[in-house]
Image (tube, rainbow, N blue to C red; front, side):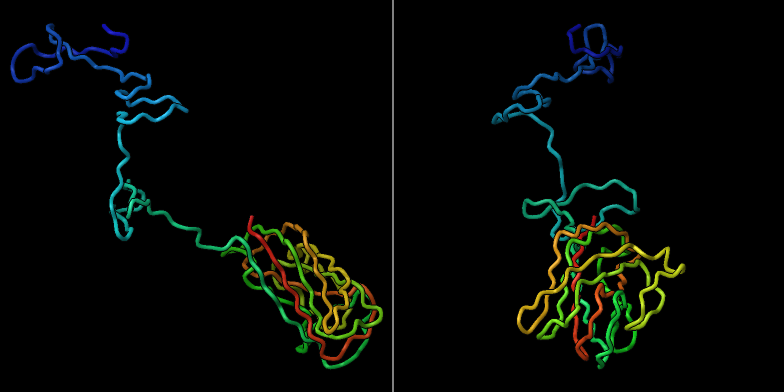
Length: 251
């Protein structure tokens, strides 16, 4: 028996069931395919060079101009599909990075902010909603950077940086110019806060560019809710427009 002979099975030596590979004693040889490489072997050694005319078993795929299910039931086996010499695959359907800008127009007054007051919109609310900050259904994201633009030509005396408080659900209502509070009802919603650097005067516009924040948060939906809070006390410009842009990346 050769080295790669696995077993023998006795078969009839005459009649319709004689196998052409049976021995003279009526045994059928069952042979292990050799594991050595070479053009006549379907076994190939890792990292060996391809040789023209190598033997092998092809991986089959169905030619389909438009991919579609070929089986009856979810969970059934199917053959890969291809067209034009290319395998059909599905591209990632959702972006892995997200950018949203929220515009806030403060009330038409010059009521001074005390240090650590919140800054709200003309409708009186200080809650900002940033939509589409994650993949569908929410999940873990990294806040990579934040920009703050203030559309005024001069920086008010006393204006410093800002805190941007982060929530995974809409926090308790709070109005412009109120002292910031972290009520017990918001303890399960808050995700932390980001310090926005004091904006610089760039002529007709104030601007704060905050890169490499890399804050990890987990959203319950695609929305991120925020409250903007001033660090310093200052007298604002009436109806000043602020634009906050947040960049996130799915992880």
